[in-house]
Image 1: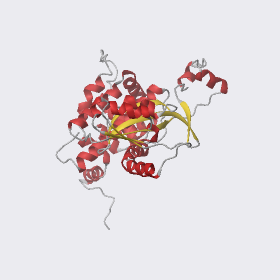
Image 2: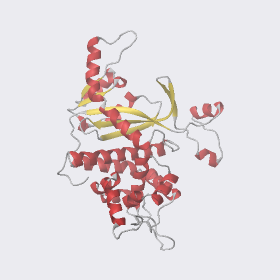
Image 3: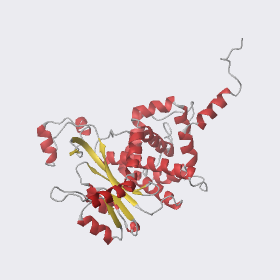
Image 4: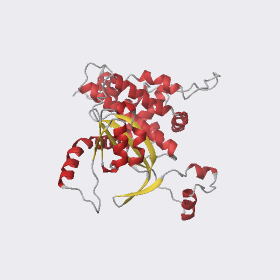
Length: 345
């Protein structure tokens, strides 16, 4: 009887090829020019290594790719450390093998924190945006704006502590306890549900569904207040789609000033209900505006709903990394299925 457990000469090679053919990370790895991000990542590290003592530092572009992996799969620092040791597809994506060492959770945290403090993560979003625009993937034939909550773990503060935080005078906690206290996140009630955390406001291209701008605020900030920070002079001549949260005379005036054509859903009031004509118009506009909700759905599906970070600065960094991940995946999808003349991003 033939022993099926006997390994052939090329069994391992065939197995790796089969894994690669079905691995979405393999496509992301080959369809993105990752080297374009290296110089931007390096800006966060002004002080170069001055001594050859000790272990050499990890390649910084590789570390950035680890942050991308984290957000693609919604993994914590400890989880990504384990997965890098365990999964061949993860090792291949970052360019490491079984015999190479991988960074531990603390090293990953420190790297992300350095990028956060230096503002480099925002620069990486801009870098990718310019590349997407250079390839003609941003159609500029319409805009969408919307906001979604970025939830964080609920803080267990006493009523007195909450009162002090709201007054802008947080309690004098012990050093280690203070590091775990988020004094920036706020509560808001929507649809009868209490939500704690932050809000991500985005502007996206209507046709491609690529994100072109963003603002991160606490959860209690109204959507319409942030719209002036999302639009730019480049948006002139386009139609802008938004839900009734952006329905006001001030917003209409602002958009017209920038030569943007407002396509905002009308809002009904107790003393002035929507007419049938208004409802029909809203329904028609929503058929296009709903595309922005697909974006938030895709992000939450990959990265999850909870952001495990403390403070607005770090939450913003995590949010922007998620937006970068989304644009990378969406951009690769566009060039793979619709733009065959483009080899990679």
